Image: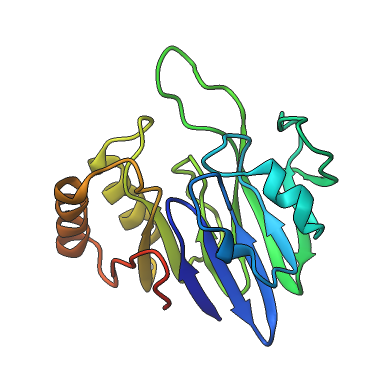
Length: 200
């Protein structure tokens, strides 16, 4: 399975000619969706889903049941629940979690699903939910108003993946990213930083 990171939380997964894209938001490059067979959306926020771009793409889109996506364009979505197993672009997928992490005073309160894809790739969206199933490759949030760096490190250690790569990092400048990357390199075995467009 080949993984290519794009800006912020967008990741492209390829295997045997099939292309699955996770969280192509308004901050990610349009090229992430070139030749996509299906799209997984973790939650309704624009940095994770670009509704106009997906409506024009015309491929199956899977999103949490109850997600309130903007209605600027018709976007047929297959609603997904936590615990549900399904196939997207030929990849076996398990949805886990349920809610977005809290920033302040219970907000935001929206549906958020993490996705376990293929043989153990995990994209948690805006949550630090630890799945019950083994994770070989963890996509670990590097920054968010809803988390502290120490929480991300603890999250990765609880999961114990063989490999980990940063996502959710477009809101920090180069100095901040260097600091986050340094901490992850020191504390998370198997961690490697991918820049947008880089493949692992």
